[in-house]
Length: 238
Ligand code: SF4
Image (cartoon, rainbow, N blue to C red; front, side, top):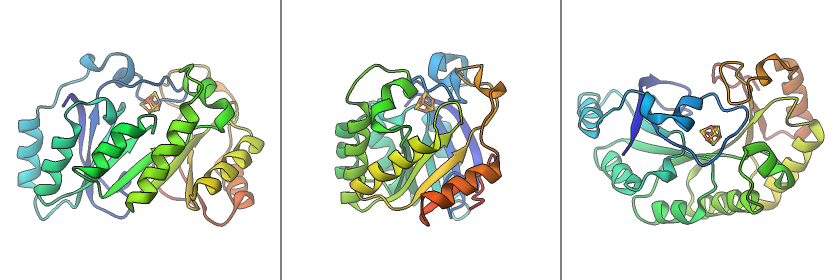
């Protein structure tokens, strides 16, 4: 596993659990709002965490931490993700795997082998705008993400479906279209995430006007009772 970052304690990345989070290097997408550009463009610039270090840490945290979040980058790019997740779960920890959802076949393999206790899957745009908002010109991207979500629902995995929202990228009409698309797949609970104005791939975005927390909460209320809002620091504010 190409592990390129490690937070030893998190209360927000695995909802409801005390966890840690590891970040994998590399990603197939180029989302303009991505706040991990180093992991996407140049993972080797980030300090490498060896599996020996990581599992040594977990051994010492038995009974203290409940879960491990594997995030990125895009974890599905890692050829040895399955044995890595298997080892985490066999060590007595819950495993949450985050993904951009564009590799349904790999997600299927993971769910049918190592399994996962929870998945965080991004739903980044209405189907028709998926390529535009993720920087990868492949027309079936949105359909692949929808398929990944269907597979996770079928497997009964606890799901965190989330969307980072910036006014310059997603209008309220876009959000309404996404609500309809998610409902059609069978997703009720959906989380809108506040844009984080740090170093991102599109460096015009932090300066551009975006939704305030109040506007995002109002938009979420209009979208339905199962829509939540995650504020800047990862805490649920609706
Ligand atoms: S936000 Fe987009 S580009 Fe960044 S890691 Fe996630 S999927 Fe990749």
